[in-house]
Image (cartoon, helix red, strand yellow):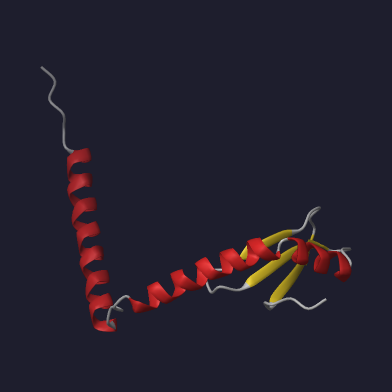
Length: 105
């Protein structure tokens, strides 16, 4: 049976069929190891409207995410250094506070 979308089948130790629409707008079918191909084709045919609807949504999200400005490699490295230095400062002040003697009145 021919479908209007490509799909990948992953066989595993499971009892039911499942459809997954990935972030890259692809269709993945998860099936039991002993599931025959005609059963998968019938399942995909029955769920075709749902699949096409969700593929369209995933494609739109993918387009929107590619329109966002990407961060440069230098900026990414700088942000990582800032985050690490911030974490070091916080852990140092936290350990200083936790190890200070407490005075009870």
